[in-house]
Image 1: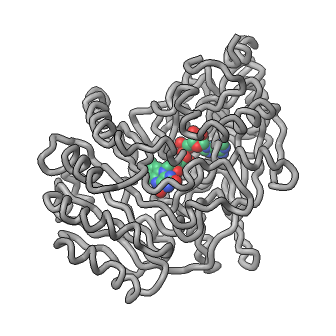
Image 2: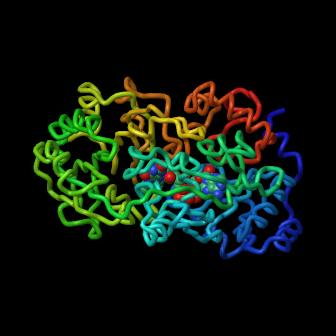
Image 3: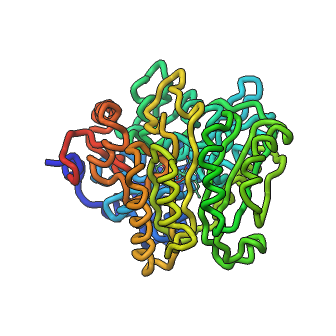
Length: 478
Ligand SMILES: Cc1cc2nc3c(=O)[nH]c(=O)nc-3n(C[C@H](O)[C@H](O)[C@H](O)COP(=O)(O)OP(=O)(O)OC[C@H]3O[C@@H](n4cnc5c(N)ncnc54)[C@H](O)[C@@H]3O)c2cc1C
């Protein structure tokens, strides 16, 4: 019998059961008949709706514990959602969804350089609170993303990653509700294996309710984007290809080939435009940064240049990701090199002569501190990976299969350079689904260790609505 089947023997959920849960929990407990259910289940990706049997809007770790206990009793898989940027498919009637948005609160300790945040906090709140104390946490490209989900998936910062590693490397303790319904404070000293597994294993080991992590003393950076005409991408990227790996760890860069919509919210030169968006950030003064940027500036003539001195909470200006929810399909994978041949394949697949309709095809250069194991190791699997690529296509849901075809075409074009490692946060809902794929992502040794931790902490695989680490060595597809 599979682990999932074993957990599913407890029986269906009746209205009385839901009423019992409502009585135990302080926050809202909603089923599909409730008017507030749809809003509580809403996701950033409109093509990945969730429709759980029950959704619990947790207001405390105790609420989360009641919800987890209820789910295990009724054989429901537990899914978790905060800002909804990476909800996995199949959060359906055999699932209980816990939303963490009400677990608010950011406490900053200026002298210890730490932030303590609830599982409902998004990066823009943490960035603003930290900035008041002259601190910068290792936030990602989009301040609307949730802090906890991001950090459990490693957390790749386009500003601080190359100088300071992954966000996960800075975590001091984690408050988590494990599958047995117990609220635990996990530190590297008291539960080292669970601490290691949570940071990189993401939602596989429990529902995190609070974390504490250290931040960096920093108030400002120099950065933004240069948008070149898409037709010039081959020439500009030929420079980027050798320029990016030579940058010091204080500088970070990525690029995105973009076919942007006719959207009045965009600056005029970008509306409906085909562009190459080169992103850049530097932890230092403008003169140093401009010296580093000089070869790239000489590579072409941008249609827009937003590179400027900025306060740290302005981190979203580096990538300028879409803010509002939209329907999309995506793919993300590691690249072991970005050679002349890789560039030629990229230009052929998504360049000016291609039929590529994808909104964004992005490549981030990694390296620096992202390659180094932190003092307290964790399960982040992407160390040593030089590049990661992420692409997405936006369309009305009936047209998304067409975008999927183009994502597959892009992945096939770059397949000679694909690396099995990946940034966990960039795994699409339909990727790393089988055990073989998840094992490949983590590598055999790390997966083996994660599976052992899963057997210890979630033997019935209650937390399986994710890129699932199986407690048993059940065959792929089980
Ligand atoms: C536009 C955009 C830009 C991004 N940029 C970056 C980037 O620069 N760097 C980077 O590393 N990532 C980036 N990401 C990925 C992002 O970090 C992940 O999608 C992250 O998980 C989102 O968290 P959320 O709260 O927004 O999403 P949610 O969908 O609410 O959560 C995503 C998943 O995280 C897990 N999770 C969330 N909260 C908890 C919890 N309390 N306990 C246990 N598990 C939990 C669950 O598995 C859940 O399914 C980006 C994503 C988008 C859409």
